[in-house]
Image (cartoon, rainbow, N blue to C red; front, top):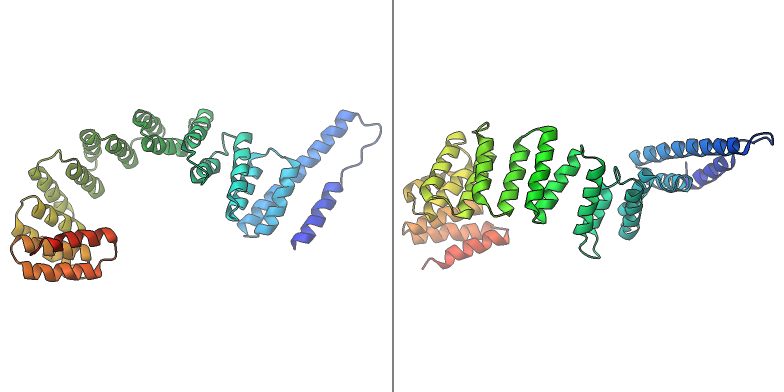
Length: 330
């Protein structure tokens, strides 16, 4: 059905109101009209929702506008209209509708308003976006998505104690799991408390000792924080390799660590050689291999691999690392 036909059809329906006899009491007439409007609203709202799922967006837009006329403060309708304007690139209009939806129903219509505030190009509205989350949470303390966002938001804003308190509440709802451990570790990393971050990982590893991602995360924190001796780092990589002996990324990282921390260069060369044998065009692996060769005095061969790595590299960060290595070879 074309939009023009929809408009005529809908207008006709809006004009059809059951006749009220003169004998009816005024309040009965008002109630009858109210029920009629509610029925019309329900029909149009579900028709609009169906049109959206069928990607008939023009039809949905017309129907939603009629829904807004019938119930100007319906949060769901206003939120849908905000999404429609958002899709059209009308960000200011979308933000206004999201705001109205939130004001009409702060318990359930907070998400799009929160996101729109964060994306608003007119200025930093993170404080207002946080207030939206906190208000919604005060109305629905069992919403796991809300708590998850609060943990992230508090962490990003440096409110670390609040982030941990929110994570406690989230764990009380869904239990402690890998995500809980990761979220808590992330808080401590941002808080610059590496020992507590490692302790959080160790707590998780007590039940999941072979979780590669957490073991690698632990090594990363150990390296960046520089609170661990090189022997401890080597031991962690040995532990990881025992679980995943053929993992090329781990072999490369361990080889580079040995090379840069005064480890066994022959062992580092053997591991690095395995990586370039499997992936001869990987610039990161070639860079590691070339640098290990240089440290062993094989500068001509080192230059060959480093130059090849530079030709294959496409990321600026990788290129800069290779250039730094090349500049140190006579």
